[in-house]
Length: 405
Image 1 (cartoon, rainbow, N blue to C red):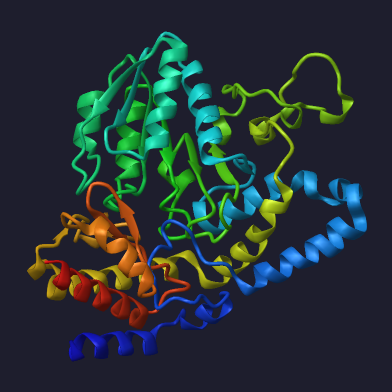
Image 2 (image 1 turned 180 degrees about the vertical axis):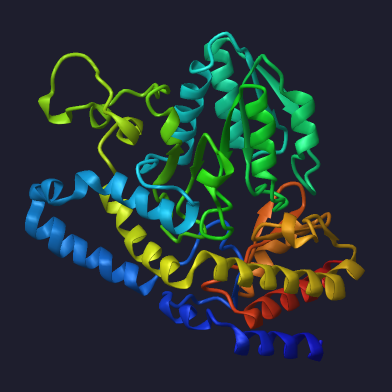
């Protein structure tokens, strides 16, 4: 135990990102291990929210729309694309929820491949992804081809190659599997799908702000993700959608609202889509909910996504070492990839009865995430989590697991 604690102390002392921890609002917990579900708020976010309410909103009132609010979905989208997504300007918008944007993009994609009746997805993807595609299949008379994925890993290129054919309109997967943390081979899966003439849609909810993403370089067609996990946007923060430049004149999203019109304030008859990425918008942008993104993207740009990824791998390596030393002997199974090239930003541990430990863990100041069946997700956020904090949290988990056993 002493060696493991000494290692945490040494890693914290050598951490080039350590100073960023002081930028977060202090939390009355011992160990927050759920950054992959809800990120912590920044002190700068609290100041920005106050300034926005008292200044831009309080002083300018409706004039704020012409001061720049109307462009926030695009300007913040471009900034997010540059800082975290590897996306050139004019391809990303901030709007809606993940579910709504997923529906828009998936519906647009299948409609852009008329005559193709097949959509390929996997059985262990996040429920929203599966439910939305089930609904679209029913609407458009499509068939769903389910790839059976191991919850301890994720989808492999070979499985995709065996599933797609000339009848496939769309394939949908998560870059980082929500349950196991499996990191998919996006470029290779894209290549396979494109050779069959299908479009690709990637869920980046567990990637953005944690794992480097190169949407343009990887040849991604469409992508969607949230901003309340590693991007620290807060509960219910808006989502983002990406649509590759070359497809923007071809794809048409189905929720035709005034903000996606070519001339929103003409209020004229009939819908005419705006050119470019603005056509992905529908209703009034959630401006107040976008305020935190300004602070969060500033911080991520300063830290650099490569440095964030480097620390994330060190953190999850350390989680694995603690799990092997303390928890595996107690019957706990590691169900996340041990290969860092295939591991996202969290580690999932599984043992029957883990759900019963949630209340005592929370009462002890340790906040992990739970996913059925019997999975505890350990999601340290690189910019807000120390190695010592991980040690403290897993030590308490070990003690409770020993008592439970």
